[in-house]
Amino acid sequence: MTRIRVGIQIAHQHAQSYSQLRETWQAVEESGADTLFTWDHFFPLAGDPGGRHFDNWTAMGAMAEVTNRIQFGCLVAATGYRNPNLLADMSRSLDHFSDGRFILGIGSGWCQPDYDGYGFEFGTAASRLKDLDRDMKIIMHRLSVLNPPPIQDPLPILIGGGGEKVTLRITAQYAHIWNGQGEPDVLAHKNKVLDAWCEKVGRDPGEIERSAQIMGPQLEKLDEYLAAGITHIILAQSGPEYDLTELHNVLKWRDAKQS
Image (cartoon, rainbow, N blue to C red; front, side):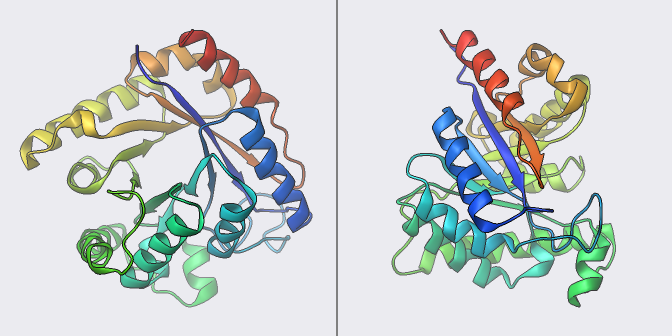
């Protein structure tokens, strides 16, 4: 039987308060969801760009403390925002603070206002992918020498993105989870490309879980996503109100498929 996992990204944009976020994280855990994610933006992407917002990595420290079972992480952290050695150290620490529940979600970044607003160099899509390729080697080395090492061995790494020439090659080299976006037929094709990259780099494609963030009308296509090889469904919610109705519906689908 195929193992199906369900998660949700709780974006911090327009969140009313930390207590609201804490209660939402705990409600997600109580729902029976498998994974819980934040995002890595500095400003809201919808609504008022100057609206309320909170930092991602400090929030994940709180998330580690107020949950007990659920795996959690960021969907996904941009390498351009942080020194890769520091990123590895923070990830290792969060793995300990959560008793081994942290997922290191990482990508090359894409949202220029985040870079400009906080003084980071935006570069080009090609230069950001080059940086991701460089930084993954640094992250893996730092994780191997930290004392103490991560609790999880290996620390789960999720890489987000669908670029077939570079991103999926990096995914084949380093990731334990791949996250894509798009319709089922698009992701079925990307899965085949990722499998081909796994063969080229000498990796068993079965070692990489396939996930997708889906929303809106895509939620009516859960069986199609599963047929396309997506076994980890991730929803998304933003403030000022967090409605978990869709999450509960997808969890019912998961449970029915695995009963």
